Length: 328
Ligand code: PBG
Image (cartoon, rainbow, N blue to C red; front, side, top):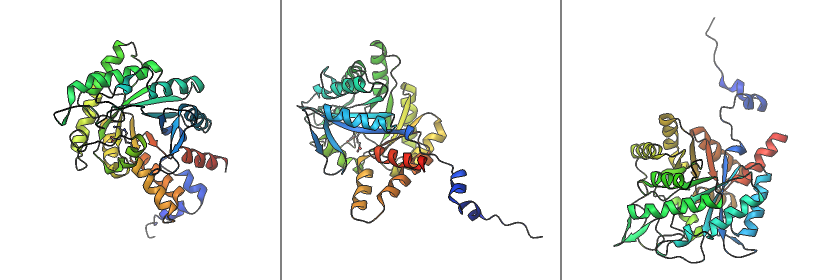
């Protein structure tokens, strides 16, 4: 008798069979929802380049977060838009800075939700760079002290985890040491380890008003062509004490995610950045693709590549769809 033919279509015929053998699960517990806090009251200002996303004053932010928590979203990632910018980004580490206020308000109202805070200076500096600028370039080592202050001030405000996104060398170690000294030994660090100098951050820079006023970020963020270097960055951050490492952006860097998971086997996050969100939203609006399906496919693809945690502006939409899927 002829050798029985394997017919992959057998397992694709019925939806329940497909679900039975599905390899990758996307769950609401894997999602982190990024949000932008601004000063004021009753502010819900649409971000033009990110339809469906807003800059929120703290009263509005708290409502948004309550809703998100109600949908089962476990964590938010907070960014702040300060009242005033200066060369040293002072509001980033002010006790009553916008993010510190937002962290306190969120922890007050929804104490069980995880609050992750972005550690960087670019939203707060007048020049829009992620560190101290001297002689036209970003100085690494003098920036470390400020980043450490940002992280400690956020932990003091109640952040459950801090996430440095600046890409200065040695910042994870500097932040770990400062947190430990301030008795926050149990506050984890999620390091933006392989963060590329990407055009996909453009909409975010409108949202956070953080575009560099001169030059670009290629002197500190990674060259999109490099993969080995990403592994080295991750190894370095782990060595310095990172608890979760991150690859960012996600979709153009799935190979980096996959490789990082295989090589290190540590908790891995992927940030599906503003441009990834806006592309799907824009094509959906134009009727060029089915937005919901494209979103879910992108998210499951990021998980399949190896990310444990997915940071996405689609968190609410995805949570809604996942919930509907469960009750079906
Ligand atoms: C701050 C920061 C950026 C993003 C997260 N943290 C912008 C940048 O590096 O220019 C981008 C997030 C996104 O595009 O969604 N350094």
